[in-house]
Image (cartoon, rainbow, N blue to C red; front, top):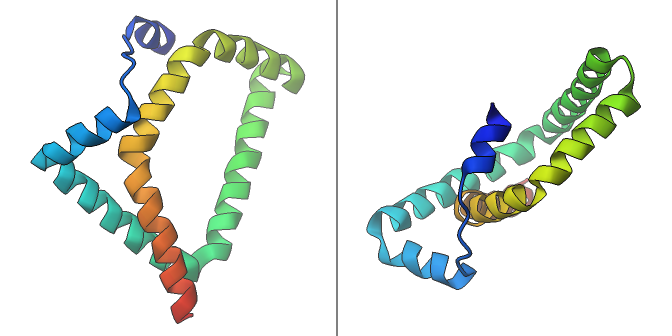
Length: 124
């Protein structure tokens, strides 16, 4: 169902500079980008204090995903090959989607996160 939904989505080729120009001229987008940056800044500052817990959480999630994939297919290599063949067919759409979401959604948060990490390290 999700694959059918993603395959019917249309992707337009808009340049990166055009996306930023549209975002700057739209006050709602500008406020959203500012709030996302501030959220990332706070997240980065707080995260430096709990870094070891975040690393442990990521490792546990990765182990859980591998075990879950293994339990479904009985064979991890078989499950990975099936997922790989499906991912290859969706690759162009996923690339454009990740690029757009990465720049407009995660870009300001990541920038704020990195600056927050630096501030947290400097104060630590």
